[in-house]
Every structure is written in structure tokens, then in C-alpha cells.
Image (cartoon, rainbow, N blue to C red; front, side, top):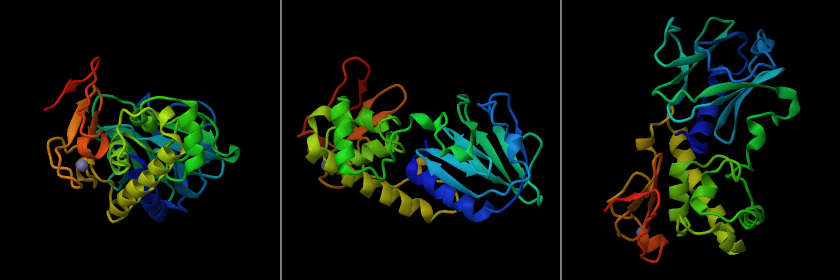
Length: 280
Ligand SMILES: [Zn+2]
């Protein structure tokens, strides 16, 4: 799933390529692509795209009256669409511009069909659903605010980081990378991390995000997850680049927690009795 660095770099590329162009028409290609009824997407017809911004892992296509909020979920992409074929593969929605240049096309591969578009009023400060549920941006949260959020809600830190209501922009991959950098167990309880633990996590978030942004800004399209830089995510069985121990995994139905025992758990191998099967 694209996370903050991928979404941010993509927003910057799309701003460079599309800002200033006038929207001719927003065209949903499936019945489920548009998640909202008001404001109408047609309110933006004839208006110039101000920019493409980001909040959490959402892309924001900002016009004067309406902002299109786009979530790519697992298999979605927002593509530059020069061909504009009648039935694009996985096509969900299309933004057509008045100059007849390339369109923007939201696609989603796979069967989940969870990517989508929400229209929200631009003037209200982007506080309408689905943006209202998002916590502060992970990349800019300060240590004292994170410490307060940790104290408010004690849970496993890996789950906390992935929950967009806690902090916005971190997903499964970044959570693994952040906790490895912070030398913190993915199963550590946030209520016990304190101010020092929060400060360590903030530094790790900033480092992991900076590494992802540097890689992603060097590309001319959004990376696939296997290409993204990292030390532990997706590297089960490989050697930890810091200490040489073997990277371990706890498998859940939708994702994998990767960690290094020596760096993160005092050498202890983690198991979850209820929901995980364990990879040797
Ligand atoms: Zn290690």
C-alpha cells in the first residue's frame, strides 16, 4: 500500500504536471468510485486545478470549490492517462481537462474495490469525512504530542502507528521500518514508552520518511512496494543490516510484522498465540 512518502512524492509530481489545467469533467467509471453525494463533482467543472496535496495517505486534488479526496488503498493508482481508452483496465474514475491533454485516471487492480473518491468543500479547511478521522501527520508530530497520545491509548505500538486516527501517513511497511530504527519491539505497549520512547519513535519516523521520500522523489512514477528502500520489511529470513541477526516475521491475515530480535526485542522471538502462524 502506498504510504506517506509515496503519496507525497506522487502529489508533487502531479502538481508539476497538472496544476493550472481546467477541469472539463469528472467521470466516475464504476458505481462505487464516488463515495459522496454533496458537494457535486460538477461544481469543479471549468475550474483550474490549484494543486495536488496530501493528508495522511490521501491525495487531495484541490479546485476552488471542491477538493477530490482520493485513497488508493492496496491496489489503486492515480495515473497520467494519455490514451483515454473507453474501458481502461481497473478504471474507477477519470478527470478530463479542457485542453484535451492527458487526463488523470484512478485505477484499482485486484478484487477489493476499496479505492475511491470523496468530494469535500475546499473552503472548510478539509475537515469533512473521511479526513475528519485522521490524527496529526506522522512526519511532523512533535515528541510531546506523541507522548500524550501514547499515554491516552495503550496498545501495541505497531498497531498504534498503523492506525490513521493515532497518526496519519504510516502503514504496514513504515511501521516495521520505524520500529526497527527505534530499536523498539513491535509489541511494546505505548502506555509504557513514556517521553523518551516517544522521542525515539519521532526520530525514527522522520528518518524512515526521509529515506522513503528521497527514493520516491527520484522516480517518475509511484514505486511498487518491493522496490521501496528498507531494512526489515519484506525481508523475512535475511540478515539484519545493523547487527546480522535473522529478520523474523509475525504473520497476520492482512499483513506481516517484520523485526530483528537482537535490535528490537532483546533476542526474544515474538509469537501471537491467537492470530499468527510463525515463520522460522
Ligand atoms: Zn538487528
